[in-house]
Length: 443
Image 1 (cartoon, rainbow, N blue to C red):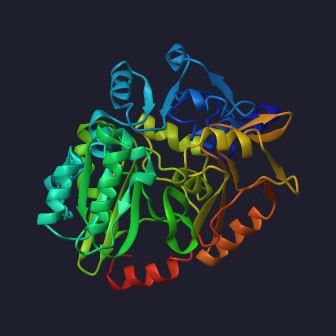
Image 2 (tube, helix red, strand yellow; image 1 turned 30 degrees about the horizontal axis):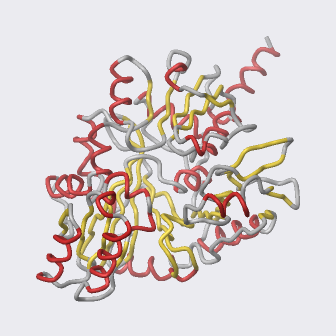
């Protein structure tokens, strides 16, 4: 009896279930590797499917791969989708009785159709910035000429995945956006698709993220500050993201005024996953810009650094609809990508010349806080693969933002990536941004 009790305790430590579960991860680009690996290390059986062919080497040597995720539906106890666009699949699987972490048709539309997202914000009585959708460059140019202003140019649909196409204008008459539209018309033509012009306002950029269990939001929620430009001090091209700082909180005016009003709607849609809304805030109010109705990358990995419970328990609890509370650490979390050429550009020749199969070296055999991104493992060595040049994400935690930064950058010193580059100022904005948010009553 004594030995049996000991075995049960070992199996259930850290809140893990007594029985192993089978979890199938369905990924668009392979971004979810780190989470899949963590779930495997927490004692579960994992399979990872990657849709994009050029990224299918990602994860080899780390987790078991799947060539066709649909063949493993019956095998899986839980299915986790990591990207937007799988909403209809998620709904169908849920009606068949499967436990699914992922989106819905409604939440897909919130992210992919910018105009729909803005309409829904207004329907939920949330303040928005003036915006207008366009299908032709000439119409957009004519609009700016008759409505001179500073604008943000945002691609919609699939094109919005190319973060370098988003353009934030600075000219009060919109002349810089007009020049960009002329350039896109020549280089992209009809392939560019729908895009949006949104009035630009100045303020603090902040995101509010939360997990939803099918009926309500889990507490605490996550407040995130993204660093999108390639170089320190917000210089260079927009990359989607180079790093992020964040914290968890039980009480947030930002959450109450943005995501919370969507609670009943998301419950009607039986959404079970993660949703995030990116905002600009200033002394005049909170202005939601766009939804991310899926995992944010690298947001989810930095969130994981702040959990004090297994991430498998979070994913399964959300899919089941049984989890209401998240166990998190006090303080702050930060994370920064180490990237290699040609990031953030798509250049196959440069990637193969400088980065393909490059080795990630650790000075000491210590990988805590280092999250594998577009990598594979061969003979215990991490090799860069895929096609984008994102090698690893390094995270740090601490009671203060400075503590978290020191923790992260100390860990980075242990990682050698040939031709690698990263930002050295992730988290620095917090010192000024927090003062503004406090003065506006938003923290």
